[in-house]
Length: 115
Length: 114
Image (cartoon, rainbow over all chains, first blue to last red; front, side, top):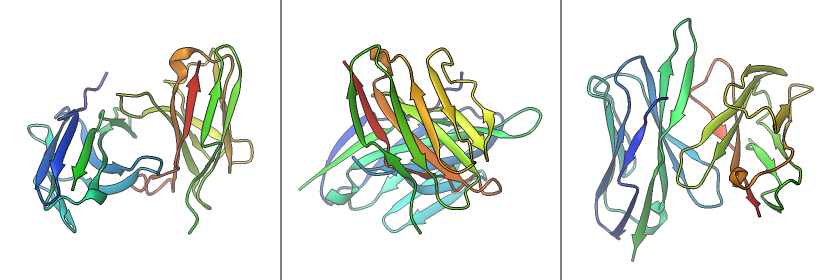
């Protein structure tokens, strides 16, 4: 069983605060690391796919970093807005022996941004 | 471009009843996935199709769950009979086989078993 862990489980911040979450994953057989954003009653939306150690990705106020050697990724949100309220999921894509790969999701970090 | 469609969006049934969920993937996406997301857990892959063939169903509880994708387009997932622990959001996703990184999700069906 793959352990993909996210922390914290939930977070309440004030509008304008910057925040960050952690995703921990096995450091062996790494293929890719995905971040998704899932608003209530909507479809999960892909934010980033990262494949290389040291990758940094940015999309507006959201950015992510990747350390495959130690098995973690950080997601940062600068100047949080109420519309950032959502569950942020990371998913570890493992390379399988014999070819192919498999996606395992973390449990998510639920972010609530208050006015 | 239309997204992944799922229906129904919500379903409440009693234990031991049967239920079916429907998914229509994005046009041209040969790969289709069904995930189960239980409250407090991450989505878990139940079954993956490539066209109408099963690629991975290792985590599908086959004694009560079944899925089909007869014409390689839309798909149904059935639970028969349902148990309380089947209460979850069932997500469908699709992708092009050569672009596995780009997996598009539907809005999910929230199932409550009472």
